[in-house]
Structures are given as structure tokens and as C-alpha cells.
Length: 342
Image (tube, rainbow, N blue to C red; front, side, top):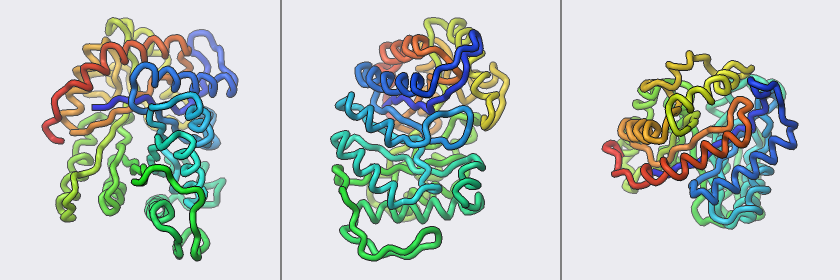
């Protein structure tokens, strides 16, 4: 299984000191963390997209990833997620084709829609249209990336007539993934278009997502697809230290700070959140390896994204944790046998 890092550019004060980075300082940390991630051997570096909230600082992952592309050479550069449901798919197609070229073909675009009400209000979109917008825009994005000239009519943007995307992707196969949660609409969208998925597994108990992973593989077979099912990914809030006590002591206030901030999806008691049946990974390297193994056995996924830099945690602590993950977790996860469900 591959491991990657995911960041949302969380811009919160340190709960211990009250210190808050400026947006420029926070973005510099995001970029230098990506450079370090490549050096440490992580497979992906993933940047989230959020608009108008107080907690997260990155509304345009493509800009940040372009800066990272110039400082790295091999790590996959991903979005987690691009709000395809809220953005014009023609502009998404252009912007990310540019990023694919700048990065030498390292783009991985995870397509989703905002969970929060502000983008729908500011962009003049009905929240109830999210699923329909996501499907329409994903399918138009695919056409723009794979067809020479596109003529098209849909519900949510003006028609296109003989539009040719310029520039073109460097990669031959569109590097497009579908994001999903516990609902099955995104599973159907992914399978209908033969696309891989990343499931947002950060906010609920792992057992809640077993039916989603299973549904993807079952639907793939039911649709009569002869190719191997697409890859499946997951994500966790994560922190690692030498001992479980150190990890929990260092992380407790920071993750509480993140989960209690405006726009937090759900508030959970800490011991429940990091416990055996909780969604987060927190502990010694061996504990985290064991939990990743259990998750892989339950879900059968082959990519796991770790969100470490949350809640105002200082960059030095983030780097110590990611270095420990790279040296003592990543090698064991990479060498683990294939999951039973895969």
C-alpha cells in the first residue's frame, strides 16, 4: 500500500501558545513539507481546497501544487479534493492540464464538491444540485481531456461548440479520481466512468465505510467491466511519536483545536477518536502499522493519505512525526501482503 500526505492548509493558533502563522508563513510550510515528503519517500502529496472559511487557507490547490512542482521531481501531486461540483469544468481542465505539464506528468486530481454552504451561496449554486453538478462536470472534464474537439450541452454552464482544450495533458490516461463518503452516488459516478476513488474516511468509524468500498467492487462486476477495478484510497488524521503516550500527549490539544473550529464536520471525544474503532491514527509506529493493516484488511484499499499538520501544530512537530512515519511505518506498510478484500 502507498502512503501519502494530505494538507488542508489549516490556519489555526497553537492551542498551547496562542501563536498563529500568517497565511504566507503557512503556505511556505505547506510547500517545504512537500519537498521533505518527496525526500522521505512518500508516494503522494495532496492539497485540499476550501473557500471562505476561517480554518483553511488554500482556495486554489493548482497554484500551490505548481509551486511544489518546481521544487520536486517524482512525488505525485494531488488534490484532495478539487471542488469540481462548484467550479467551471472548462477552467479546471485547462488549469490542471497546465499543472500536469509543469510537473512532468505527476498530477492526480480527486474530484468532489464542497461539504460547506458558503461556496454554494457565493457562487450562486443550489446545495441540492451538488450530486448532479459533480456528475455533469466530471463527465465534461473527461471529454475535454480525451477528445480533440468537444461540442456539448448541459444543465449548469453554457453549451460548448467545437472547443479544443489547450494545452493538453502530458499523461495519456486522465489522472482523475472520484471522492466519496458514505453515500453511493459517487460510487456509481466512478464506476460508470471507469475511475478510481478516494473515500473520505476521516470523520466516521472505519466500519461505516466497509459497505462503500465493497459496493465499488461489486458494482464494477455488475456492470460487466472486464478491466481490473480502479484503485481505492482512504484518508486519516494521523500523528506518530516514539510511544503511544507521547503521541497522544502531543496531539490531543491540536486535534481538538481542529475538530472544534468552525466548519468541523463532527466533534468526537479524543479517546474514542484515536481508539481501536475510531477514525484517526495516533500512537507509536507499531500501533499505527497495526491499525493501517486492519483498515486495509477491512477496506482492501491500496492508497492511504495522512493528514498530520492540523490544529496549529508547529512545523517542527509535524516534521518529526512525518520522519518517523517514513522511517518506521512506510517500509512495513509497503511490504505488507495484499489485502484479503483487494
